[in-house]
Length: 312
Image 1: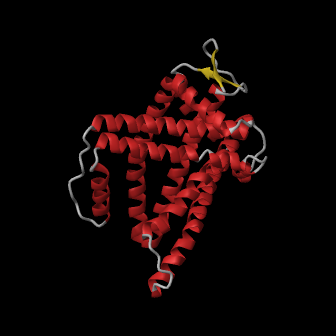
Image 2: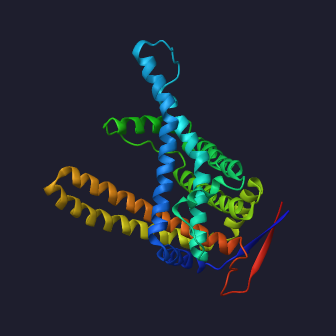
Image 3: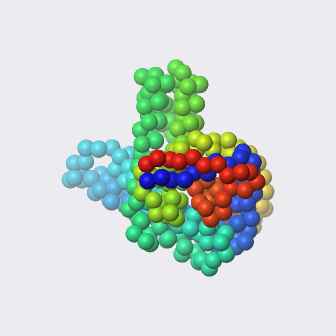
């Protein structure tokens, strides 16, 4: 099986960011609502996954009748984490579907985020969550190799102290530069492999493993435009957060003079809107870059088309 991958110029990175605003601007209410609904679905699923563990811990703490031998962290954190890992690709496929339909001018509603549950691709999409599992395992390995034998326990103690309000000196890894570079490279490859594999499985009906491998190859040959897009997004996000904090903080302060509860509600709504906006830009860029790198719906323009073949 051969998967065709387009190579695109670095300037495409800027285009993906600006065009994502254009796509979302065609139906902003729908796109933002879909993003919020997607977030709501993931939160509800994670909450539901935590309920059995919470019930078990509550019953055991009452009379120790269950005799639980594992810690609260494993009972309460691991099930929601696993649900999130395998549910995210399905929900993200729906978000990309909404953006694709809006870009094409086809009718779509907010329930388009459920597109990942249609067409018999749900399990294939969910299996892409294994990329995140593998990435976490590799991250632990790199942390052990470059941080040193004592770094992970020390870091765990540091985080536990921070949650208790106790300030201690953070641990110093043995090879900090290598740990930083390996984490950055692993995060980049894991993110792109997962996101572009989701788009391929959802839109092009490719098998998950072939899609992940092709996504890794596409990320490597298109590292320049992806880096440009990532830097622009990061800078824009940083500036946006500062502006939002200043403007939102002022608004909340003014409203809180009238009613404290109303100020808290305004703060929550501002946070939700900001999160939906960030997701809109991020998924818009993912959809547009998938279209340019993998799809023939709108081949890369401005330069002669180049291709590589990913042999499966």
